[in-house]
Image (tube, rainbow, N blue to C red):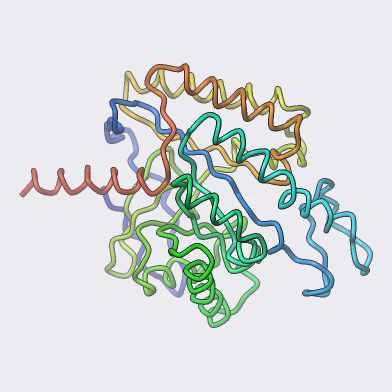
Length: 313
């Protein structure tokens, strides 16, 4: 099913219907009914900081919106914890469990810690584009957003030896982002929307583009917001409930997809890493649930769509 989102006055119309009651029934590779995509967001070194931007980022350990106009060493060093220690604690856990994940990384973050790119490549994790830096994209002009998009792709190739096939902006895209991704012509999918449980296609100005929806529901950023997670048990329990419900629901409507988002500076803390360990163990012992990379989810969905098109022909 394709939803028409042709540009109207430079904007995309909203779609409140989607698949509606006719959700496509799908089985994932290996017979799984639930594809769990663990997304490790790696942003450390690409965030706003006083020395480079004349402003501080507000997503350190304490999300304080109003900060004095001076350099914030507390937030800077919190981000550094993610790149110095947190990323490697998570990497060791993932290496032990052997699960495939998606790394949503800013290009500059990888440039400043190239060992992370080498680890990703060695373990076969896929790369989701997350911007040149961790920038609030809607604040940019169309021209600057396009410049940063192309600069990011070039830097990914330089540092990681490959480009991303998907894209996910910080927080939310601009009204120009989808058009720029289509014009770039190298993307398999976009993950900016958070509006469905399974992938879907959009018709953007005559180009068919796959959307593999992201989600901010099961996300460790909720440790910093209210209402959110008071402790690691809350995060693990929230994920367990989602996994169990979707596996049960699959018996009625077919396979589902579930996104779980983590960050090196937050889940990389030892107490919170224990929640990730519990989540991984629960998925691994749940029949019908399996971890999948985002690129593989996109390719599988496209193969299903191609098969349906051939059957209709």
